[in-house]
Length: 350
Image (tube, rainbow, N blue to C red; front, side, top):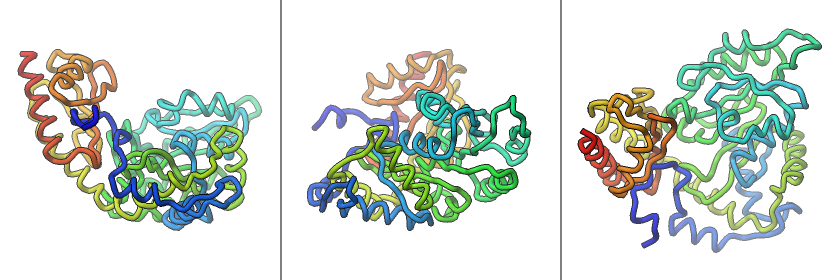
């Protein structure tokens, strides 16, 4: 038993560890030099993702953050502006990479649960003016993490895309949890990805891989993305050992995401009736549950500490807000245990 096995770990779906079959696939992977295009496993993974998303080709990158940053670097020149929701990962969680690396400014929109409207985009697009930033890119995060794991409806995406195209803007999808949206909505990944010039898929969250993301776009776009991959130190050698995990996940771990969604809803149902707890948002769509404990007179850190003493790991998202994320390493029993532990913490506080 490892240290991680002693806890029910709901901090993030990035906490997943490779299953034994995935480890075997990695150990047996055919490999070569990725930079020379000679790694068959990496090539196959990129072909699978490009086909899944309906794009010409794709590139394997070490992280989702690098997928976002490489895409921004290809899309934007210094001084240009990106439109995104105020909760977007490129704003909250990437060390201001768009500004530091591309010299691009991100203009935040206040959407509803991380989802903004076509009208908001239209209002945010700046008129041509030499004194103002040039609006260049619209970025959508699917699902919206800090929007509570909310799923962008296809109609909303198409409306936003229509306005962007009308004004000559490029479109990028942060698809960190895109397949969660696919499983929750029944809309295919190809349909969700169709309006976007670039889109990436995370392997290290719900799919359960140890590392990596795959960025897909046109051949010309990915050719330029390779240049930035190399500049940023993301070029690898026998990356097929890692790519094999992605191949296995796409073949075996997609449909099971529905289990994570069911467990998240179960956890939300168990805690929603507790005095002083407020679900934010109240409707759990995928595998993320955000809740506020200010009504109980507690801080998030107090709850985190109380849960940790009872063998539950959970993340604080603010002074009073917490986030629980279900994934393949936590089944129904673990979720029931976590909910019971939270009840105990709340009772102890009384």
